[in-house]
Image (cartoon, rainbow, N blue to C red; front, side):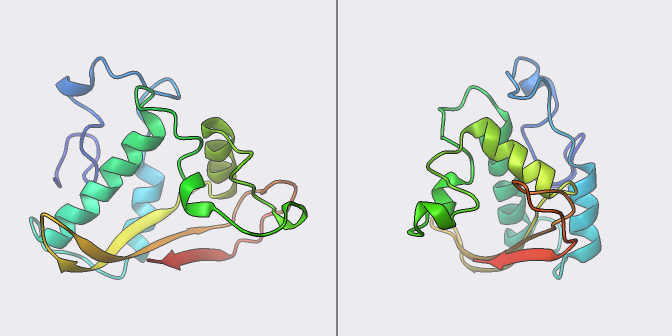
Length: 158
């Protein structure tokens, strides 16, 4: 999946097959800034064509489609299913129950203006069921719901 026209990490973004795509924000996204963050700070460089590279690019393509292609079913915010919480409402600075696709997207792109990079650290099993370890990271360089940016690295592993 590497070497794709327009973006070397994501497929189904440019080309003949995407001419009639209904993009949620008016056109295909540009990943140049987050790709630079990824390339500068990743901890693994996988060989071209390796299972790890294919899985990494597959996840990036899936994430692009779920956030930017309007024809997908409404999901109530791309990250909302992963950000469920049992905190009392008064302690929630981000409440996935109240966020929409648009408000969730705006919060993340405002808070992380260079994006939130993703890398595969290890693939434990191959197809058809893939189990992997990953790192997802970005920098709090924009405001978040009334809180000033800190510049801090925000990262999680899964």
